[in-house]
Length: 213
DNA sequence: TTCCAGGCAATAC
DNA sequence: GTATTGCATGGA
Image 1 (cartoon, rainbow, N blue to C red):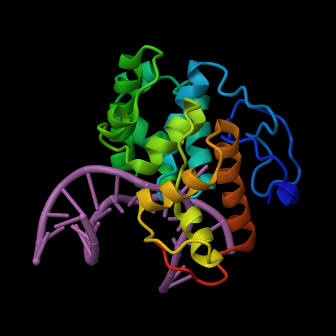
Image 2 (cartoon, chains in turn purple, yellow, cyan):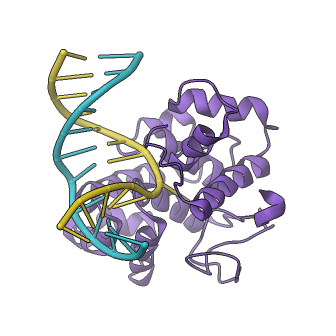
């Protein structure tokens, strides 16, 4: 997949204006071969907010919400934590589930401020309301650069078609499978997950693999 | 119009 | 511990 699609440069960040013409959807937000992102606390925060906003939603819808937040100077935890809930709901409307996501963003913003720049551990993140296994691992892998493998709907669909996995398709069994078979390296984990997503987006759900498998 | 997308918490068994 | 359900917009 790497030979076919090239380095993916995840996570997509709004601030990056480089162009990767082979991308479908948007031409912005990627930073292939540059693994120094996020470069500051705001970018770190942006990744975490994006991880929450993209829950069960397309990235296109998420990106609209992120752009709205950015335009209104809402990409900082203080602003989100202190603003009117209805204002926040309006800005993230396009991401869907905006009532619960607005509350989750506020809760996470408080948590992020309390960290004061420190890296949270997995259990701390999971204890935050609105953060489940996938959102947690996305934050750790892409914002905090901890080598933990991210399992999402694409990952399971990829495995379901591949025949190389005979276990149960629950989150932790799938995660363990990848972590056992890949070198525990931050760049490899980031690229492998992003390449699976790119591959699955391109081929579509041809075999109509059901969600959850 | 219908279906589904980079989940999660609450609830029910 | 596992299964089900509500949440909501926007594109195909």
